[in-house]
Amino acid sequence: MPETSQPRTPRVVIVGPASWNHLIELDHLPEPTPHMEFARRSAHTIGGTSAGKALHLAQLGTSSELHALLADDPEGRQVRAALAAAGVMLHAHASSRTEKHVNLMTRAGARLSIYVDTPSSASQDTLHALETALGRTDLAVVDLSDLGAALLERRPKAAWAAELWVDLHDYDGASPYHEPFVEAADVVFMNDDNISDPWALMSSCLERGPRLAVCTRGAAGAVALDAGGTRYSTQALPVDIVDTNGAGDAFMAGFLHTALGGYGIDESLRQGAAQATIALGSVHLHPSLSPTLDAG
Image (cartoon, rainbow, N blue to C red; front, side, top):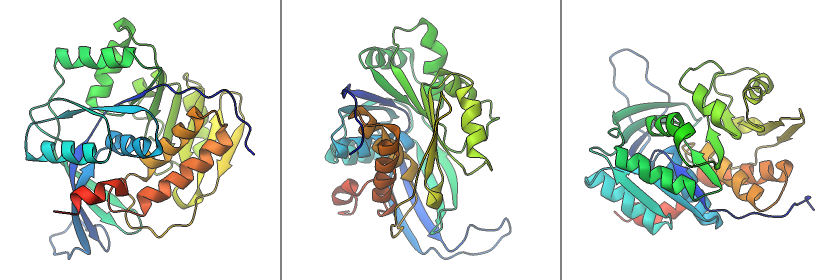
């Protein structure tokens, strides 16, 4: 039985992207020459790293709310409706455009993301509203985005001091865009797509302030390193992969939910790996989207 401490149950505030995605599965990513490809599968669905985390936390029963920039356009209305039907508490903030992607995917997990539209910059009113929400929570997930960067830049003068968890995705240890997120975070997550030594990268992150770093490694499982130098690891669980979109977000949600329940890092890693299989087994970020999106 895993060792537990006194559980804490704050409402988690998640800030970042929610998008409308067109997923196209190919046998392999296209070469940079004029030619024709036949899609193995095509689907329209919800995307965005913050939406993925919110969907999994909602289904796990963690009290959470998602703040995202969405326009009042057809795509934005579809995002709103599908997230609401899946039980996500969504606070949509005004944007002139809803974020839209075309993702070229392979069954093995290779991906090329084409940003068709990105949200407009957040207004001062939106930033104030987000800072108010962040000021009411004990734990915040602020995802990589221009919106997240703006909130971190304003943080020294803003009245919020929530514990901050950040998903660095395919951070290579040198990207200047990621640096403010690393330095502000208490806990960082990443994957090993652009690195050869996850332990060195996690150690480098911890030197800049976080107390814990976690790195997902696909079929090789996941590892973690705490500020005291203790190493942790877990294996990936077997799963028939349908789509790799959102597996990292599902992992982080499973880890966070378990940690909030008072469990240690080992058990949180195991539950993160278990949660990732839910995303891997669905064309959607979470199968709870299926009743709304597959009906059309």
